[in-house]
Amino acid sequence: GELVSVVLPDHLAKIGTQAFASCSKLQKVEISDSVESIGESAFANCSSLEIINLPLGLTEIKASTFYACYFLESIEIPFQVKKIGVNAFYNCLSLNKVKISKNTTEIGKGAFDQCFTEGVEFTTVAGNKYLPSFIATNYPKATIKTVEDISLGKVSNIKTEIEYTGTPYKPEVKVTLNNGKKVEAGKDYKVVYVNNVAAGNGKVYVVGIDGYGEGYVNSFTVVCKHSTIEKTVAKKPTC
Image (cartoon, rainbow, N blue to C red; front, side):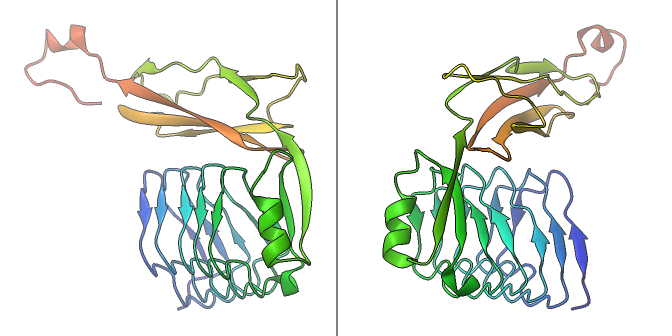
């Protein structure tokens, strides 16, 4: 089709199988972090695709999701992804940089075949026990770049229940590492808020950037409380 760029809406939960397959002119996709599932071959044969972000709630990259995306040069695998399916990035000829989590412990056959003639640079934390042996066996030309692990510590200042106010809940999150090293928001990690306005369940993601990898996810609930209003109106208000 003629689609060149797309921004998917907030609160979208799923991208279906082959949703954008063979959109040969599609170059850029922005996916909301509310998305938790992307179907098989969703972007297969998007031969012009150059830029796409994977949502932080994703736990699996399914088979052939990015099959033959020739111009895709880099990708960051979210830290909650445990499995990468068969042929997930097969024939992504330009793909040369992949940031991948220690939590990814299953990579399917052909997942990175024909990527940059398989001289891909994988970035991960030093504690990744799965990746080195996988690469040695399947992609001997590939290299590994290590970064520090932001998840070896704790986060604070995130409540589990918030009263609805109509304004976004954006706490100033603090990360404390076990080794005592100081880290800064915007420099070492980023904070992403999902479903943080309307009543319901939301999440706060803390994600290592630049010299850090991995992350944290904390859930919270926005609760609608109108006890005083309910005494003066006949119909219960909604948030």
